[in-house]
Image (tube, rainbow, N blue to C red; front, side, top):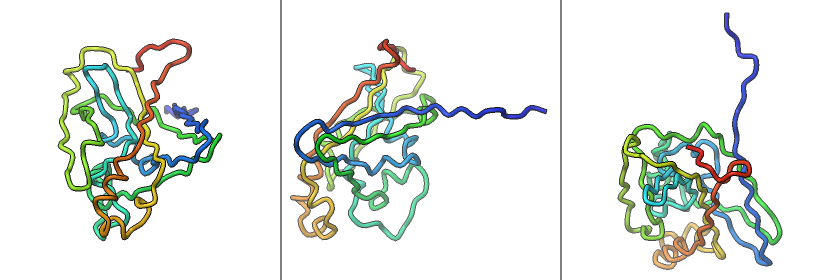
Length: 192
């Protein structure tokens, strides 16, 4: 009778460092491992040959207050009021580590095409485009994307979501994108 002698879990450890002399805020709403396999965070940029695991905010679907209706599964990310704005305060000369299970990467079926999250808004939903995985012919290089804010005052204030909508929307889009290409060992070869 077969038995499992040892279970090996392959994790990618990503360390994000704030080497500046100012505090920043790292958008972390999708850092929980239950979201890592969501197809909406995994995006293909066919033109640049990139497979992105993007932790950038999907602004139309985020909120400051949860709704009464609870959705379970990866569709939760693209349903309004299911995911709240959450940040890690990133003080100067500090770091944050994020573990990502390698099994959360999936190149089967329909894949979400990359898009620019800053072009969406609280008022305008994202129109996702898809690419069938068998249409991929070239190698893909893995890249992580993170959102770093200088100020999140309105995004942490429940009333601002409703009473200061335009200012709130502007602050939601005022993030800096930090892209981290993944290099394996000392060689920059594709993971997929």
